Amino acid sequence: MGGGKRKGRGKSKKKPSPEQILASRYIHDWVFREDRDSTPPAGHRPVFEFHCHSKCSDGFLSPLSVVQKAHKRGVKVLALTDHDTMAGIPEAMEAANKLGILIIPGVEISSLYSEELNNLLTSIRSGRVLRSKDMLAKLNKLKLPLNWEHIVKIAGEGVSPGRLHVARAMVQAGHVENLKQAFNKYLYDGGPAYAKGSEPSAEVVVELIASTGGVAALAHPWALKNPAAVIRSLKAAGLHAMEVYRSDGKVDGFGELADLHSLIKLGGSDFHGRGGNDESELGSVNLPLVSIYRFLKLARPIWCNASKTILQSFAEEPSSQRLEKLTIFGRPGGCCCGGQVVDLCLSSWLMKEEGTEAEFDAIRLKLSQTVISNGEIQLPIATH
Image 1 (cartoon, rainbow, N blue to C red):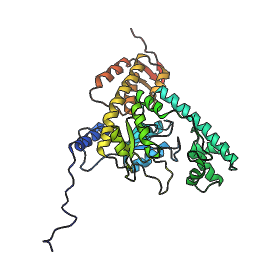
Image 2: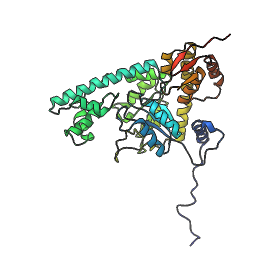
Image 3: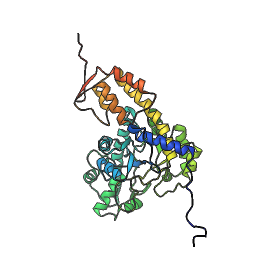
């Protein structure tokens, strides 16, 4: 029967475009930058996860466990994006270094540390506490009493309680059957137990991120009541990217909005570690290579310029206080020179940019006589 037309066979795969080929090479060189001469295996692509949470905000797993789970899922680049805090980044980086994963520091956005940004996040976290207490008061009036200490315990040490923690307390107290019921009946926006926090406007946040060496990306725009107007306003404030791709593959018209405003199209699982079939797994969003390529082409110069500014400022006036802020994602152990701090920071910030070696070498040279012992700056000893 071999003379007939064969069905389902003979279909040739669509050849990659020149931009896709360039994107594949560029991404491979960045992810495997210690082995840049290697050739990307045919059909292989590093898995990126741009959106996930740990128990440092409203997730259920520690940063260590999130990284370990990501490693098992084949994730190569992970952005830990806890709500209003970067407290989990050092633990995530320590685990990732052992497993060969790259960590992009984030707070639902990609950003390097800055004093102004940190102050803003501190203010938001304080507002989350007040908001949760307001919810508690409203629930008490609804004859659904909860204990504040119990909510704090659910959130965990050092974590500002939020709406999810209140919902979990409601389930444990028997007021509702599950988290979905807690939100649908009481905690939804405008619901009987809903309370507003002290969050700044989105435009203020975007402007601050754009001015402090970060990449501003809008998360889950499908939750907005008027996404077209909001995105237009945030683009004017400096928005770089927006979430478009989801694990279910749906774009729901947001890809067109991103194209309209020349925004990079990203996506992530929004993994929280709840377990069950209703949550997307880490690395489950299949991002197009070209989207990742465009993100890195945008982000790398931003990160590079921010790195130079921060390190040059430290070289001009080294101090233990500045060192603490500089090495927020990883501190040098024992005794070392200031030049080694430069290498530590560049490694933490995923920096190894061609064409900038001379500028960073000049900073290393300037710090070569600065001695750091157990995180403290020591003045260089004069010799005769």
